[in-house]
Length: 77
Image 1 (tube, one colour):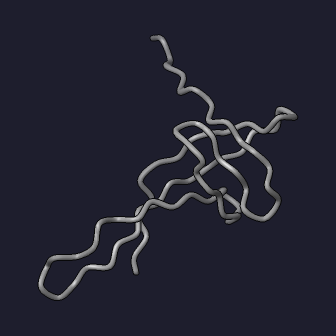
Image 2 (cartoon, one colour; image 1 turned 90 degrees about the vertical axis):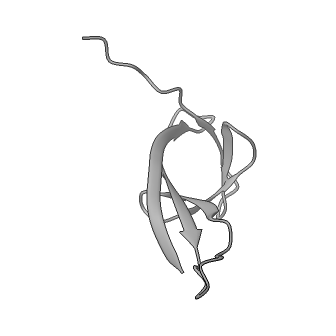
């Protein structure tokens, strides 16, 4: 099974700590080319697993700490 980094974002816990979350897509191609749909997984930059609860809410698997995705910021030029 191969995992490819497809995105990353920051999420914040209730105490204000910021976490860097990486989004991966995993898939197992079949010999006939009809592989499974990709599975999306999330991990912290340090490797801890993250479970997606809804669009902007996540939970650290080991500790149960809830995280909220930070809105993406645009840099004005």
